Length: 98
Length: 235
Image (cartoon, rainbow over all chains, first blue to last red; front, top):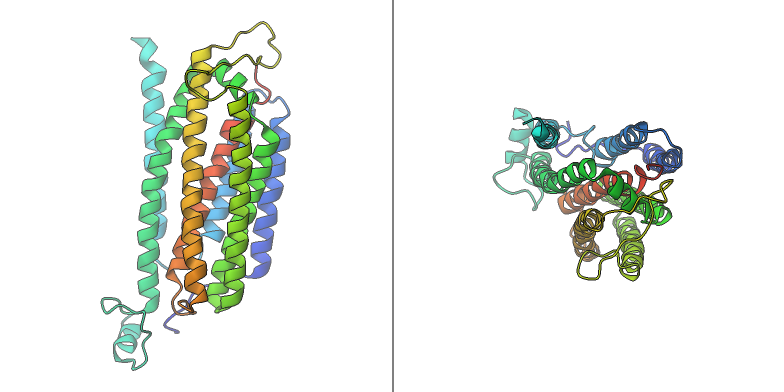
């Protein structure tokens, strides 16, 4: 086994990911002009999360890294971000109950 | 692992960039990239605080936030999103060139990335200028007279719309500052690459500054729908 082995992402995959990101930007723009009620926010955030996932996994090489701690560290960041947002909303959303 | 350890220790020609406390270049690079990820975690929490403020005030002042959001130009926002995604792609290509040892192409892709980053900042400056002209910048001369889509009788609250723009300028401004720093880091990479500092064995700064640039892209991937898109049809 080579001492210095890095996964080289194939050119075609980078092209595909780049094109997908641009197409999804067009899609999220188009969908935002249609009134879907509360689903506008859900669709926009789902598309954003899909795009962000592609960037993190492919462009940031998280899919290919053999460093075992990278994925747990990212999971930790997402966990604490969700904790911050949900607990803050639970606070502000329920103050009127008192 | 133990095999490669032995190989590294006894290898007569181990790379000069390999620090003595690492066994292999791969381990050294993985460690550096993990350190970069830990920094990015702190960045996630930094921007997370502002996303949290946005979320709470949007729920509280829903109609005023919708009216204020409808006043920013979604076409420029979409264009800038595309520009930033392209710059992320050129950055990924730059890292790939560094991995393959294509030093000249690495510099070309870095310069492309800087070019698209500069275009993004230029469009952002144009958007800020429009907001200054419209008196939509929070402060003593702030005034907001736009109507909420489909509700010509609703008068948006001055304080609440000002809160939207405070958050808008804080978040996009912090994002833009990160991009300016990114451009400086890339200028360093161009110079270092020009001096032949990188090889297929050592390109850690390219990889880590790439991670930083992609992170800034991810922040914008969320800012674009939240600030520009999700209130387009609300009222």
